[in-house]
Length: 300
Ligand code: NAD
Image 1 (cartoon, rainbow, N blue to C red):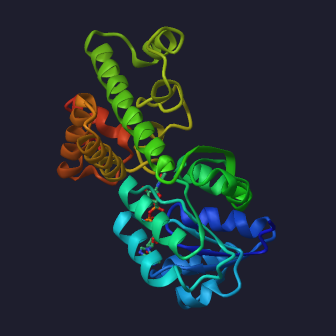
Image 2 (cartoon, rainbow, N blue to C red):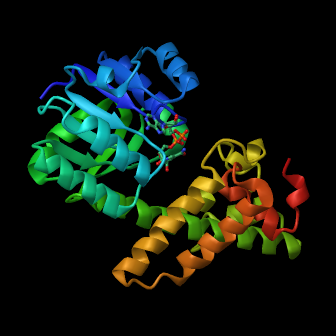
């Protein structure tokens, strides 16, 4: 299947870069967002702004959504996409949402004869802009090749995690692990500092020892050793603490429903929620180190 015309709904921090990469690949991108400012960004990035979802959907080969949370996805699909998009269009939701919402929308789409996939992403805004996101997909096996080609201009890698909802399950588990491992790195750096060990030297040791992990080697919460990490720019940009709180809540809700035991995920959720309540929800999640160091005043 070829993808010449795409409807892209939700052009926020992530969506605008993703839609821009679809346009750069030569696809006609009909963009819609309820925010006029977001629509302007999309137009500047080579997309065709639509005045409504209905207008964006005309004759498209695929519909891609990048919305904040489950309720947005449920209502946009139930009220404005299903029954309105061409029946041949591949529908792909890239938002991070709860597994139940993903499965509900998938069932509604299937009832109406559509191909639907949940395809949340890993990589953040830099990867969205660069077209190097990792997609984790939940869809029927035979639908996967078409879903994968719809995502190509935005992706570094696309993995089918399983049937509907499996993409969201993979995303939630991955982010729970990320949230926990970052707190571990922040605690270790804060302890190293108290013990008189320079955080830069600790990096040298731990990055080559058994404490090595992505949060340490790719996202070190202390400026210097990893120049691209948000710690080098006052913890701005990156992945907002408020988003991490949302993802850890999704993980805890899923764990409660599935009867899984995730005590560290619960602790991590509580710590990021506290940091958020203290007014730092907009900072990158690695800024939590300043709370552990007792240096919240360093965050401006
Ligand atoms: P965002 O809030 O910047 O963008 C969401 C956009 O959706 C906004 O522009 C908003 O106006 C629009 N929107 C809301 N309701 C709408 C509707 N009914 N119709 C049309 N547009 C509507 O959020 P974001 O950072 O782009 O994140 C989007 C999703 O991607 C979230 O689920 C988030 O968890 C996930 N995600 C974000 C990151 C990141 O680093 N920001 C990384 C991975 C995954």
